[in-house]
Amino acid sequence: MEAEIERFFQGTAETNLQKYHLDLRKILTTQIRPHGRINEWRRLLEAVPPETAIPSFTTDTVRIGPEGKDYSTQLKALTPWRKGPLKIGKTIIDTEWRSDWKWKRIKPHVVDLRGKRVLDVGCGNGYFLFRMLGEGAKLALGVDPTILFNFQFALMQKVTADNNAYLLPLRSEDLPAFGMFDVVFSMGVLYHRRSPLDHLQELFNFLRPGGQLVLESLIIEENKDNLLIPEDRYAKMANVWFIPSTFSLEVMASRVGFQDSRIKDVTLTTTQEQRSTKWMEFESLVNFLDPADTSKTVEGYPAPRRAILTAKKPI
Ligand code: SAH
Image 1 (cartoon, rainbow, N blue to C red):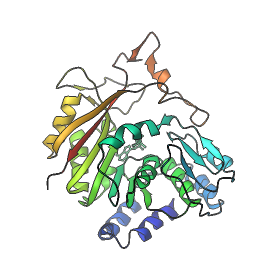
Image 2 (tube, rainbow, N blue to C red):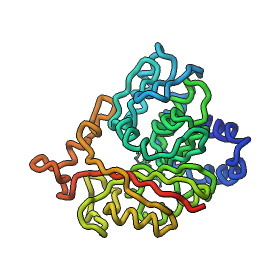
Image 3 (cartoon, rainbow, N blue to C red):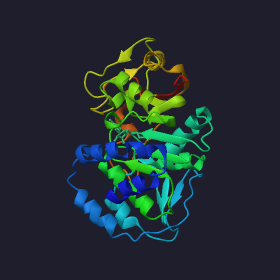
């Protein structure tokens, strides 16, 4: 993970991000979450010989690392794998999520990424960063505070040719107001934040004037101007603070200054898109729904439905 952080600083030394390097170094010394297994993961990663295999970022299954090599021991030590599908060396990782389905829904609504600098906030293991490079982005920076996902990304980067996808183990709220990204993605993050308007304001501040926001969130379709605030858990998740209606999501983005704030897609999450697999053996969507009525979560709330919103920072 540390090597990945250094690769970010080297790889962006000649870009507009350079002026934030000192700030970022400071934040990285104070804000990285401690994790009990970090030394084990460090040792595991150090033992993997570096490789320069050419990856495939344009296919639904992101392929990375030398085709014939077996990394299954390391890959198992780094479970659960949530976002993919991935093929790392010779191993296909059937992740909990079919993130390629999400990308198919998102892509038609995103500006042409060729030559663009993009930021993916809460990017998980970086699956979408690779897909963004696959669409021609010249720089794809992700942030995600979950240390495991940073190690998953670091393993993938260690066995592939150098590329401009980077991941820093930081939270969105700790980042400087870059004001320079052409496109900012926040997918599956908003409802984990206690303060949704503040999150939207951060995203606004990361963009250059004229830049595009691509936001993906759980939503409710009922109750036009309402938010659902779960009394306790939502779909067994303790960290869902609220779920906006599609209408209130558009309004929230407008209130922090975005233009053309529009919902572009609403899709019910299916148990084919999110499920337990060999690579994520914990409970998944099927266990979060009421078996007697799968239009409801086990808590009796509307079943997970997700929307894509795009908006523009005024010039
Ligand atoms: N964007 C991916 C992953 C969504 S899961 C997708 O759409 O599939 C939510 C992710 O947000 C998790 O990986 C979690 O670690 C990360 N996250 C949680 N709080 C965050 C914060 N404050 N800033 C940035 N990322 C955060």
